[in-house]
Amino acid sequence: MQMQIVPMRENHLDAVAALETVCFAAPWTREGLAEELSNPQAHFLVAEEDGVVAGYIGVQEICGEGYVTNVAVLPAYRRRGIGERLVREAVDGARGRGCDFLSLEVRVSNEAAIRLYERLGFHREGKRKNFYRDPAEDAYIYTILLKEETT
Image (cartoon, rainbow, N blue to C red; front, side, top):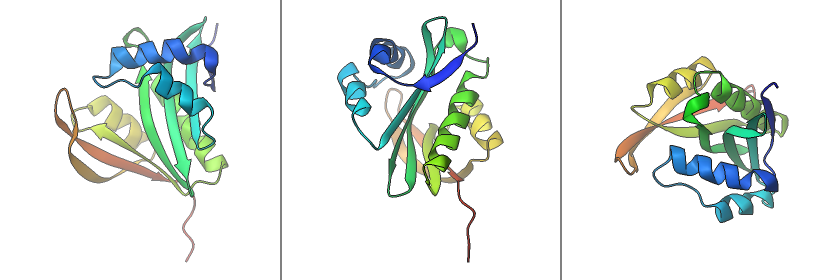
């Protein structure tokens, strides 16, 4: 079966919460993820293959500004383009909903993610000191403009 990118639903919550615990030192809880299902400003997508949630991305939007909350892919499914598909879908969705830009933070040591974001048109806009814990690390801020600037 092909990988499908679909909106996160109730039936995905257990798998996405488990994915969070595999990928992050400070994972979102199932309850926190469930709250996003009823948040009109939240747009979460999952990558499914043969009933397995292989990855997900979360975006929150307000006043034309989009922010990626998390991108995660199960270790066994990495290096297969899933993260790229998720980010592309999130960018396209935010653009389609009228966002001016989409922004995210990434660990300064996460070279693979940085290469992906730059390849997709994101630009480094700054750095947040000590943004991450376990281990403590700075984050780069990356942003992609979704609308042509008019003067």
